[in-house]
Image 1 (cartoon, chains in turn brown, red):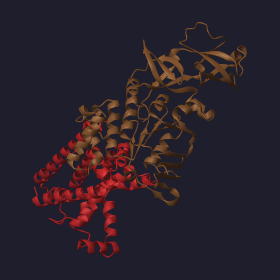
Image 2 (cartoon, chains in turn blue, brown):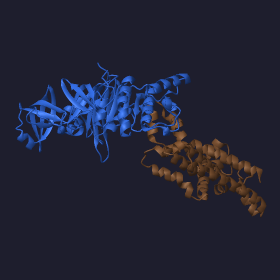
Image 3 (tube, rainbow over the protein chains, first blue to last red):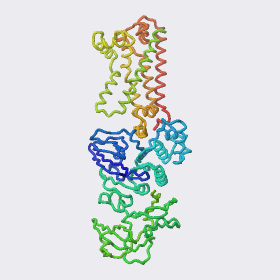
Image 4 (cartoon, helix red, strand yellow):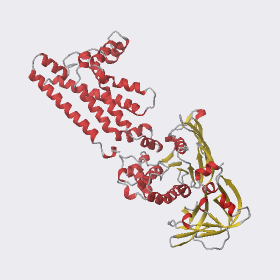
Length: 366
Length: 223
């Protein structure tokens, strides 16, 4: 049987929601699972239960066959024995210790030489060598998160839990660290769970995604699949109606990049970075449907498409399109659908402006 | 100044402070972190000596630990002699009477330690006790020191409880504050002044130290 983390936790909050989440995650060292949901959905509750910091009212957690929690049997392993590393929003570094002592904190039993070697190795890996003698108060937000990750990794965790690791950072730092974080997690080869409510973060970091809405896990699957095909209306509302296609950047010119997704070429703003692997994201409401193909438009992307199906959503119509083999979803008003006489099988042109094509680079899956 | 009384006062204050560190720190940590519903009752009990006349505390201790009561006999078996008019009895009463002076600043400093730091230490595999000494104490030491210093100074200046429990046995229970009282009764104002000035100076220095610690914690405590 494949190694897996199975959990089922129930936690009630007085006068608040009840969290009832269950999932089974394969424990593949290089896989990152994203726990996605709006604030208040119970993401942090699940993470704290996994870390052993909170005890759910009822539940069971088994890590690779080892029981961490079984409320029915009265079993609850303390966090010290679970060895699940935690990186929170604010890294919670020990303010009275310098960076080196923070990173080496878990290694109290190792000899001084061993500890120094491990601290140096992690510092090199996370690029925090110049900071080793500093105090946490002298670090920037991004530096703190790196140190926090190094400190967690020093303890050789079996599972890594990251609770909105980038959300306390300013936007430029967040974007810069996002790509790096994925590389760090892959290199660490520790199964990781990242809690986030940020879609770009989910796409850039995750392989698999769990969507948590109202305390329960509503959908599980590869990140881009969940974004492209939400299981139900509530998941769709949570993740947004978005077309997410995996692809490769095949050309870069004048600040624009062209992504090839199975033959479908889309032009968007170049996100920078060296990675060729990327997701292209287009919100359904940004796709304009036009009658005859072959006319001029300011939109950089003019695609030949065929209507597959139509679904009424109040004043809007959700149109599924076949575009060179890929499926795109567009959202138009009912009036427009009537004017264009949209029906399954009808050929249309789908126009998307380059600024509406979001390219999220990601490291290639190992 | 009465050398025997000074020696007695210093050893009483020192031992009281040490005992209060042993008892007060765990109690303060419990008060700072427990989610026990009736914690406020415990807090009230700890604070009682602040508002109670020392005579009340002394009176009940005398009644409870009188030589013929079970508690009194247990005390005698343990300490080797009866509770009243003994140094050990005085020590026990001082610990109780100075309890809030030690526990309250300690609990305040311990409660100010960010629980996320403690949790981080636990997830890093470090035991609760080791976490207390490696994270909590370094971040709350100024409060613990304040508590210890206050307890020391408060015990040094204690009068009512000493008189109730200890009486006035030279070298055994005759502390500095009692000595001052004796001097005044005997109209020896010069001797009383020397001892009083000494206690005044010590108390002032102690308070300066305590307030200094609370006002200027080290940089990492200023969060």
